Length: 88
Image (cartoon, rainbow, N blue to C red; front, side, top):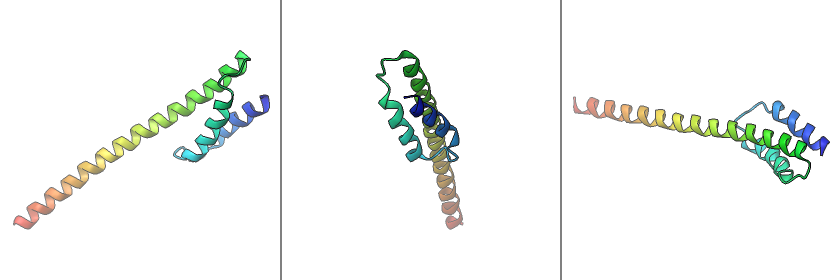
């Protein structure tokens, strides 16, 4: 259990690409394995790592939504400009 915690903790900080869902999924699998751990200390440690993963993934989702929103605005602006150019 200690080994799994240390491995997960260090892997969490080793992840270079914060957009890598696969790497976070591996960490999440280890964390979920100990979510019902009878030793409260370890249960707390693993739940903290899970919170960090959830936070990063929720920020990633917000950034993707904002990016999609900006792209949609740019696309509609370009379409409007093209329509105006064709009318002239």
